[in-house]
Image 1 (cartoon, rainbow, N blue to C red):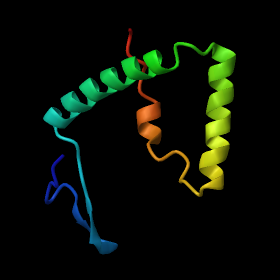
Image 2 (image 1 turned 45 degrees about the vertical axis):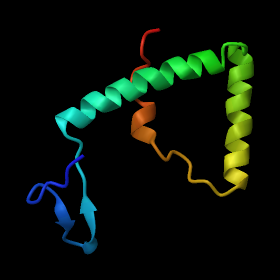
Image 3 (image 1 turned 180 degrees about the horizontal axis):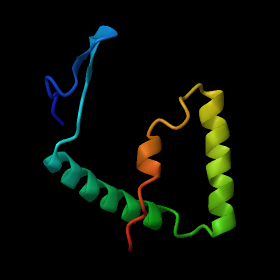
Image 4 (image 1 turned 90 degrees about the vertical axis):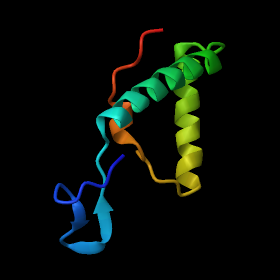
Length: 85
C-alpha cells in the first residue's frame, strides 16, 4: 500500500487521517492471499454441508454481535468472486 500525496494524503476534513491506496503490487498480493484463504476455507469447512455451513455462519454472527465486533469489517473483500478450487 502506498500513501499517495496529492491523490489522497491528509484528508481535508480531518488532518489526523490519511487515505491509503493499494498499489498494483499490493493488488497482486491481495489476489494471492484471497486464493490461499479460499482454499483454506474450503478445507476447513469440508465436513459441513451447505445447511450446516449457513447455520455456523449465523451462529458466529450472533457471537460477534454479542461481543461488540464491528459487522462487515471487510465488506469489499466479501464481494470478490470466489477463487476456483
